[in-house]
Length: 354
Image (tube, rainbow, N blue to C red; front, side, top):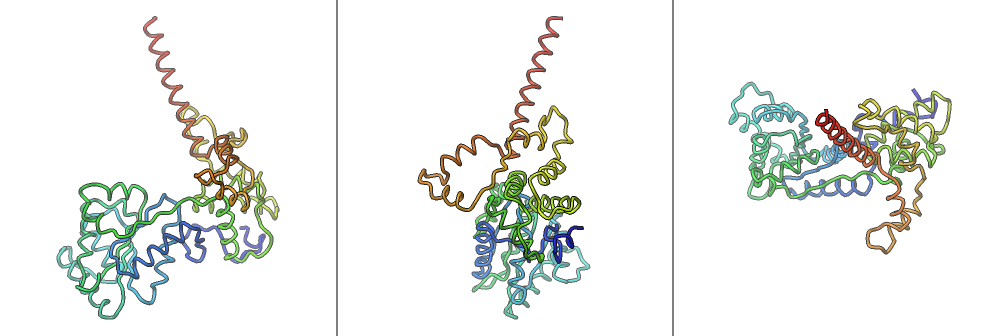
């Protein structure tokens, strides 16, 4: 364990969604504000949609902590269920013992709880995580929960949280009534290279680090490319990089350490060569992944460039000359597909000749 070696009180890059480690970049800050004000204004249905690993759950725990003393909250994550099972999960989450499968009875129990909280002057917030897994029938059950209201206000605030496929599901004609009730739709975007550095510094500071930076600029640049700005992947790369640096008795994570970690964590090297001919290490050796550090001044100059798209000519040239890991892998899959088609055509030609 590297905590003592780097002078840390606790693990800065753990897998648990600890709200203390939440880094509020621009997208996360905007999503948090949208959800917070939506609840404050009693808007009813809210939604948060983002790719896996973007920090949705950590953000939600941070949000619910703000209402810890003023609201009753329930966090539902068991979403592969039918409507009866969903209601049982919901009642169990708020501490109501249920000995019946009668759907109407469960609704009555939940309604009484809502009324009690409203009379006590408390809000009731239900967060449904991984909502993209809910069947349309269960989503209709969720919609009907929003009918619990008074002439003055909604008794229940519901936050639907999920991956982009949740948006696809909500866009279907069969869920038009539910979609129309969603009054706020928020999303999260990957962190920029500069935000990645701030993200890492923030988590290290919370964990007790107060010395000089632990990552070289070149290491951060490669880490930004390899992680694609996804917080969960950043945490994973940082954890293994610090572990390797500790094993080598290095007080600073350099480019070679991140390169080795990126290669070790590259799942594509275990895939068939026809499917993906290049591994992460070979991509880095060919220069497809950038290892040039990005400074705040460079990012500001690119953002103020007057070409209408927020990027300087140099940045555009760099974007053309380098590929992200996802783009590189997709390119190689396309090449492999063309190769297979060529081989198939050659085989057919040989068969006809014979």
